[in-house]
Length: 111
Image 1 (tube, helix red, strand yellow):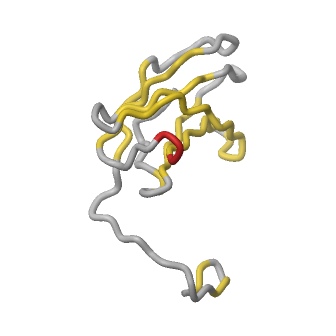
Image 2 (tube, one colour; image 1 turned 90 degrees about the vertical axis):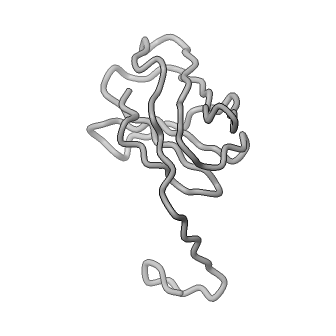
């Protein structure tokens, strides 16, 4: 298989029936200087704590990314709890990915 002009004979492709979705975040605003816990609700996906990743991405600059600490993930409630440690004031989105499913559809995770 060739991806981005790089050949690999060990790479595999995983096809999933539907992309798991991120449904919302509570709270959807926070003080830029205070630590806040955020709860992200998802529909589907594999939610193992050590295999869930969340990034804060500036809405006006995709290169401005900050990883958030995943406190816990609950596969039964389909929730991910993360620590927001503050950021420069502005509009952001939360990008959620898992080791098993890749990036979740995050159209509704504006922060």
